Image (cartoon, rainbow, N blue to C red; front, side, top):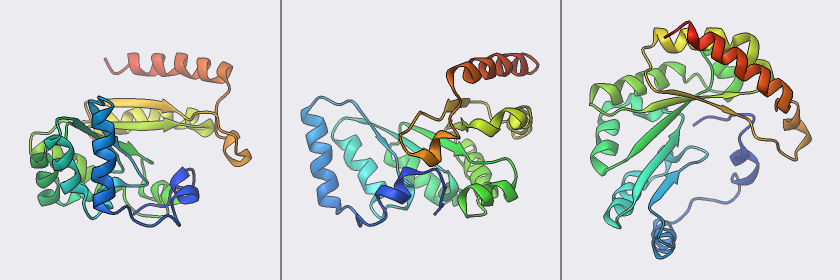
Length: 197
């Protein structure tokens, strides 16, 4: 339900079709045999998988925990949020794609910021504590103070940042901070975050 320009799924998963639920169950059984204790559902966007809730229930039934990385948009439907929590999800991390609807559209091809924030609030309202993460790229530094202010204004209490990992593709390398810039940015993050204690 997003078309994030940096997402691997657009390039690698667009022509693979939908995984049959029976195959998904086989994959879960293989992981169980290998003593895996937690499965993280990632995408593209896992919440649009037609058997998403059934898959959570199946993983829980098989004795494993289920984590989710999501854009959070589907949780704007409170009934859906309740079903996911009742199915037994262990943790949910919502990716913050931008702090304005205009930038969200620029980054994802969708107007989804309001849905994401509503989804976060719905989870909070039903008593589920989810986290929000933000990916740091080359142009994040000038905007980061605004991001922290936005997080604070939205009363998001569990927030993490991630740095884009180096990749082989040329179009992505410009977005990755080199180690020196990353170190300087971490120092800046520390200084900004001290203001919010």
